[in-house]
Length: 264
Image (cartoon, rainbow, N blue to C red; front, side, top):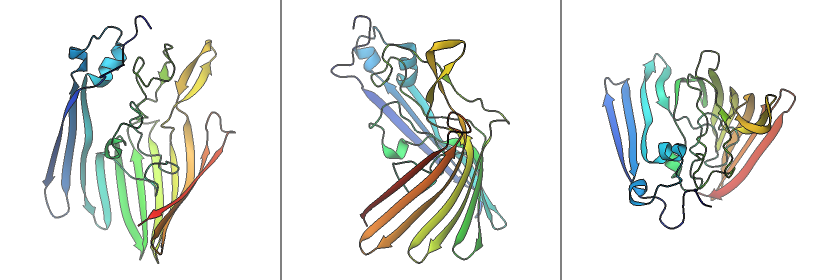
C-alpha cells in the first residue's frame, strides 16, 4: 500500500561479524565474551520510504552480546555468573520445559538455530549428590522476553496496527527462579523441572482504559515439568511434559506435552 515499505525483491543485504574472547585464569576459573554485530546495507541501497523507526532500529545496525560470563568451581559446586544460555530440557526446537532463554523471533524460520536462543544474565549453580544424579539451580537477574517482529517489518503479524508491549522490568521483584534434578544412566536421561518466571511469548490482553486496543502482555507463571531421553536400537526417543499455571489468571492452567524420535 502507498506509504508502506516495499519488501518485494531484495529485502536484506547484511554484513556481520562475530567476535569470541575466552580467558582461562586458573584450572578452575575461566571467562568468555561473545559479540555479534551487523549492518544491513539495504537501507542505503533501496528506497527507505515507509520504513518504520522500529524496523530500522532492529536491523540497520545490530550489536548483540551473545555470551558474557565467568565460570568456575567452589568446592564441589560449579558456578556460572553472567549472560548465558542454559539449555533446559531434551527437545531442540519444540519448547515445553525449556522456558529459560527467550527466542529471537524477529524473522521466523530464518534465524540459525545456534543463534535462536537469547542470553539471560543469571547466576547458575550445578552439582552432584549421588552417582548418576545432578542438580541445577539458577536465578535470572534479567527479565528478558522473546524478540518479536518489529512494527513495520515484513513479519509483523498485526498489519498496520501498532500494538504496545508491556515488558517486565528488570528488578529484584521480577527475579526468575529455576531448579532441576536430573538422572543419567542405564540408557536413560531423566529430569524434573521447576520454574517461576515470566512467559517469554506475549499474549494479547485488554486494558480497561483502552478496551478496543489489545496490549501484548507477559504473565508471571509457574512451570513444573519433566523430560526424558532414551535409546533403543538405532533410535533416540525424547519426551517432555509440563504444567503451566498463571497464563492469563491463576485459574487458567495449561498442560503441554511433546514426544518424538530420530535415528541416532
